[in-house]
Length: 476
Ligand SMILES: Cc1cc2nc3c(=O)[nH]c(=O)nc-3n(C[C@H](O)[C@H](O)[C@H](O)COP(=O)(O)OP(=O)(O)OC[C@H]3O[C@@H](n4cnc5c(N)ncnc54)[C@H](O)[C@@H]3O)c2cc1C
Ligand SMILES: C=Cc1c2[nH]c(c1C)Cc1[nH]c(c(CCC(=O)O)c1C)Cc1[nH]c(c(C)c1CCC(=O)O)Cc1[nH]c(c(C)c1C=C)C2
Image 1 (spheres, helix red, strand yellow):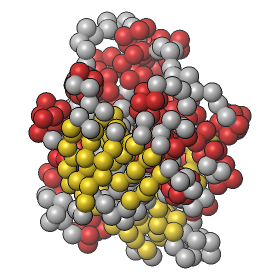
Image 2 (tube, helix red, strand yellow):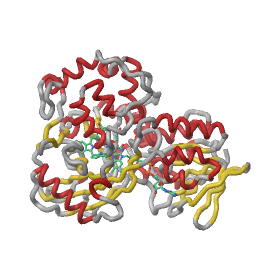
Image 3 (spheres, helix red, strand yellow):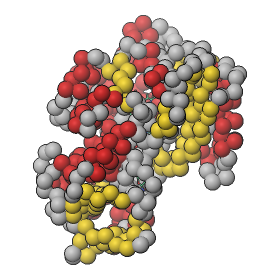
Image 4 (cartoon, helix red, strand yellow):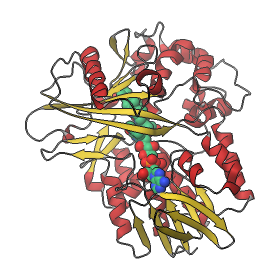
């Protein structure tokens, strides 16, 4: 392989470039990013007083093949000493809350949490789990998450717990999201074991093989539930960028938006604002809709399918309060759509990562997330809403939900337009048919990034690795 162009310099494009760079088979890697920085949604503000605020992801899970894979990369980049782990026994792992009927309720955990009736639920969770074993498996090839959970565990759990969970991961509506694509473990447990309960007890099928490196082994030994980095998660893309800059085979281009791409027998031509670049193969780590807008019209069937993968907009408001202001301790709370459509949830950042608090004087850091699938309905056009409106709505939620009446001593409002792709029912078929089109037409193109195979940072990195392995026809 002579030249591979990687489109989009978020964590997906950086990871693809990293894996390409590891292989001697590739002569040249060209990474093209439209904005003035690499990292995409991994974005941390570091203040001069020591405070670190995350505007995108704030914690990564170490578990599973995808979690091990990321830790192996982190170790290879020399970031092991920067890790901030949060163990399973930490309050942030044990305590998560739901805000229902204008009150915070701790989500049931442990055996006693399953046996008792825990508000806002009207019966013990064990009842739903025990009866779930006898529910017949579906013959449908996909289903909405809400329909799946209602059928197997009851409507109450679907309406409150699962509705909130989908807002806290996809900022999305569980009535539209696909169980098969968003929660493959649940789908496979039903298909392979006939039940979620049996699937959890017996395992729901083979998982990818990723041998754990020393850092991943440490995460198991020390029981990590999630981790961040000392200077915030943006340290990860910064470190990959440094790694790539050290290679003479890699060209990194910021402020280089791709205008369109064309294909001929001699390969791809990528049209930029001020010139063109040629490549033998393209790995796209662009959001699906952006890729659809730059592809040549000869790819019409692919363009159509890419356009069907839409994204939601999330407003992220970081708040710093003086002193210790939280009435409870834990990861944060989620708000079901029946309680408040626009307010998705509040993360209590100071609890899992106190190391990111300002170095002098006690502070509490919170992040309020708003909008998602309900953005337009609640706030109107993202282009018309003001920062003042979003800040006001966020501080009002903190006052009502957590009883914090003081004004924040620092705040940051970010409007993330089209930031989380929504895997609606039938997503897996759309992705399958896009990849078939590429294969059947022998297009030297790979699809990676959060639009296809999972939205978590771990999933995006693993998808980049898979794209490179498939391209080079070997393991990395
Ligand atoms: C608020 C929020 C909280 C999250 N929390 C978590 C979490 O706690 N844990 C977790 O695991 N995940 C979390 N995620 C998800 C995760 O951060 C994202 O799914 C992931 O970062 C997406 O990476 P990506 O590279 O696929 O896409 P992006 O980050 O969107 O990268 C795409 C890149 O393409 C560039 N681009 C766009 N158009 C062009 C063009 N024409 N030419 C060139 N470049 C272009 C963009 O500028 C961008 O840099 C969160 C996401 C958000 C938004
Ligand atoms: C309130 C909105 C959001 C919060 N986080 C996100 C949104 C949209 C985005 C997000 N959160 C997680 C992921 C990755 C999923 C993964 O597979 O690793 C993404 C894209 C992690 C996560 N956050 C919550 C859960 C249950 C998970 C899954 C992994 C885990 O169990 O740790 C819950 C949660 N998210 C938010 C809050 C306030 C909250 C619960 C109290 C914020």
